[in-house]
Length: 222
Ligand SMILES: [Zn+2]
Picture 1 (cartoon, helix red, strand yellow):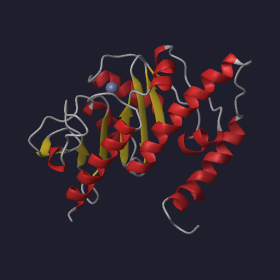
Picture 2: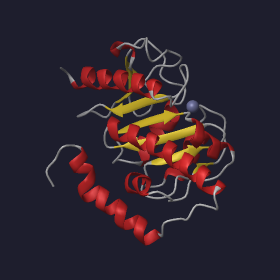
Picture 3: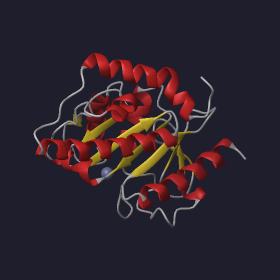
Picture 4: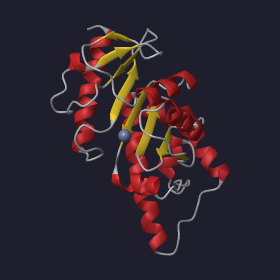
């Protein structure tokens, strides 16, 4: 199977998982990944239900957003995906969700601090809120890149979550951990206040994840 066919199949499967896990409703949210050995991006189409999306519906674009292959219009949030790929060579996959607790933080314009270990291991620190801009705009894309910095997740003010990773599985895990951390953070603040991990401990845990744990999760023996 070609790289394009393989990545399209993976994105279709991840879309169904995202819907089943309740991270999005309807056709909202979007998913992309780099096509291996090319400079192209595979991205979900605009306005198509995840259950109905076929592999050939996944649009292949270049880093400028020109359509290389596919009959449908790419996701309206393509500028956010392209801006992240342009600024972060390490990012191979991006998932954007509208999950409830993370969106509550995004609506309150409250970053999720480094409060729980699995989050900081994968994401690398706090999940910061990108300044508000209308969806689909280039300025929103720039705000998201700034909030993301060198980490693997950010919140979009009054909107939702962006999670990144070296694989689609890791990007999905980032979105799920952000949602779980947001829920924990909100609950902890109701019982006396969340205690925040130190920068040093956060760095140690993220470095361990990057050096060893991520590879073990990918089935490599390190
Ligand atoms: Zn959205």
